[in-house]
Image (cartoon, rainbow, N blue to C red; front, top):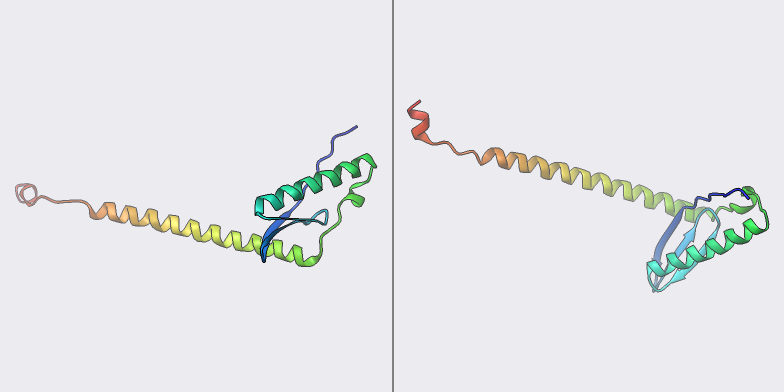
Length: 118
């Protein structure tokens, strides 16, 4: 039997006092008391689902079932916000490096004896 690879997009978020993890490609959901617990439960649910699908010789078209659009939109928003944060962090790092260079250039000292005796 040929090995198969499945790719999933996952989101996890807090809703009131519980954490929710959602599989966007297989339309599965799990919850937990922590984000890690929700993700672990989703991983277990997804693994079990895929195991059964493979045993039943289901095609990719039968296996992949998209989660509702609201979760796809949430994923897109998370990706967008993460990208913005990464860009802000990159800009802060560039600014910090620039300030360090600027500070280094301001730390040069000149001795008037050396300058006047040249």
